[in-house]
Length: 105
View 1 (cartoon, helix red, strand yellow):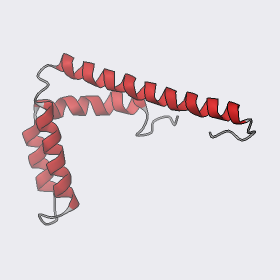
View 2: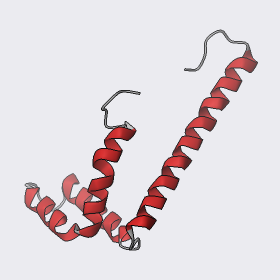
View 3: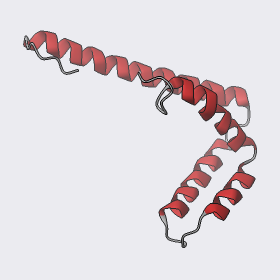
View 4: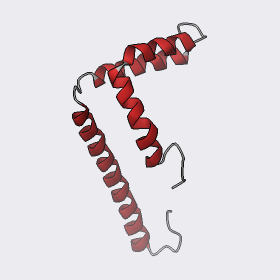
């Protein structure tokens, strides 16, 4: 895994989780700031993205306590890792069974 990339866990622990906490606590100023940044018309991709972000933040309102949000994020991370592990093991097993000298990865 690349060090310091957007897909790295270190990036998401340092920037993604704090940003999520800030967005959950104060969503209206952030959304207003995004609307001020939008230079396009009402049918641009950025307006649609802001609308999706607003819906996402409305969904976060159901998570009232930070402890619940942390549990949800941690369980999601565990599920993603388990899925990755199962795919890796499946590819490893199919490579061994086929007798191919060229692995899938």
